[in-house]
Image (cartoon, rainbow, N blue to C red; front, side, top):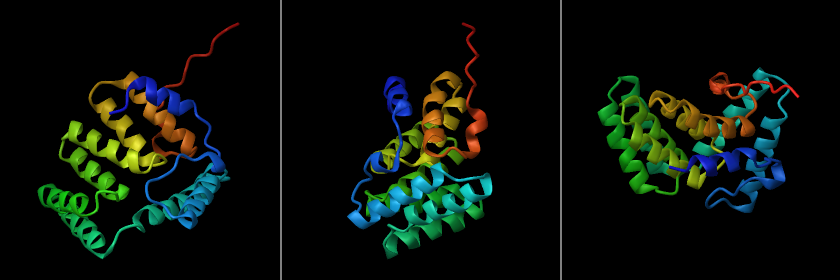
Length: 184
């Protein structure tokens, strides 16, 4: 996992559309589409608008799956709906073995590991997600949530703030601890 200092540095970095950290393996066209989506998200006028853009980003992220990856993702989703996390993990582990550069595969694996209570393994999968897609605000929020669950509330603030810098309408924004106002 990234150190707290590295996450703080990332949290302070500007996130303008032209300055997005690169995602692994994107074509020039896909990189432009990604930049446009995140620019739209950062300038969303309200929460409803932001949720529509988030849906487009999720579609974008999932769009890099080949046919086999899509099949494994769907099998995992079906298992999750039955609360069969063991079977969901089998499908997702097969997915990341089949497509190790598919960021959303790692993110979904992290989610199911989290649901299964395997927090350290989930954090490792989130690190893989973020190595492939540094703008994955849900993976960053997931890191924050897990750190809170582990009793590391102060350490959780860095990934949560980074996620909020990417997505100002982040659903988990209420988990960010407000800094006390300083009197001059």
